[in-house]
Image 1 (tube, rainbow, N blue to C red):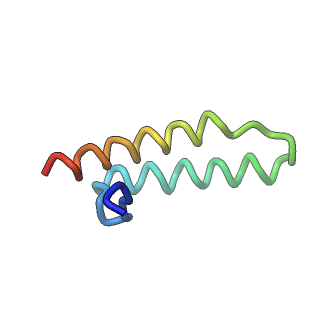
Image 2 (cartoon, rainbow, N blue to C red):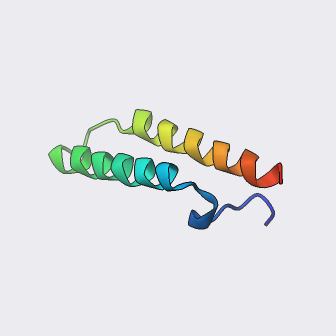
Length: 58
C-alpha cells in the first residue's frame, strides 16, 4: 500500500486544518441529517493529496 498516508505524513498545520474541518463536518451533521458536507470533504481530500505528493517526492 504505497499510496497510503498516515497522520504522521501531515505537517502540524495540515493536522490542525484536518481536525478543524472534521469538527465543522460533525457540527453540520448534528444540525441536520440532510446537510451537504461534500465541500468540507473536498478540502480534506486536497490536504491529503498534498501530503501524498510530498511523501512520494522524497
